Image (cartoon, rainbow, N blue to C red):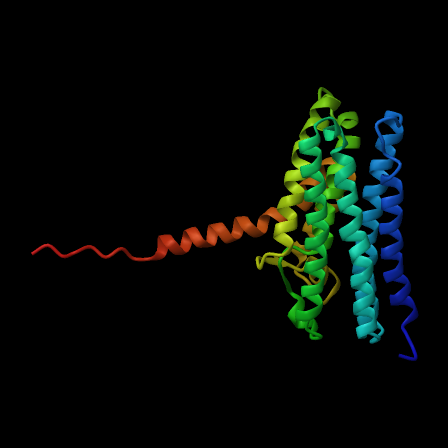
Length: 270
């Protein structure tokens, strides 16, 4: 390897740096830290994971636009993804569930779930590298939940925990924290298994950045941006978890419809 593409490589490295920074800010969260500082660190860590997703989307697009896509870029992308969408969300799960430290058995289970999440993210990325096709037309759908979307699910819980009580009157912080304490390990286990599943997921980045789209697609994109700008604390949670759970929901619905379509044979009565 003698030459590398500068802009795509810098964008990919930006992805990895954001993942490392997300871990650094999450590491500052502790039981003795002030509440305002804890909320700020949760939001910063989550936003850095989301920023890593932006870098991850742009580096591939920049490589295709400049016709500099290479095996080096693909391997570098996966290495940075392990940090941003594997290690950072797994570490964030531990911080989201730190209230369970007083219950040793549950705390140990949370640690196992976080480690399993990291392992599944690594397996998901390795499988993608092996099965990835160089043909852009083959990238319309994913097999298994993409690791950035899984990381977005965890990041959305951090934003929900830190911001939701301050923007919704009548909602107590303890209620949100209890919900996150319960859902964070269960949700992390769910998206970990979805990453290594064979369920089909649409590739929204390809649909957004490649080719022309109907006018309704533009309207939907504008409405989505408006919702995120108006209620980001709740919007990210609904968007990422809606996308993640859409896969198993569609699969179960398709199975139910296929079963209902099978004709039932009754013995003839003579």
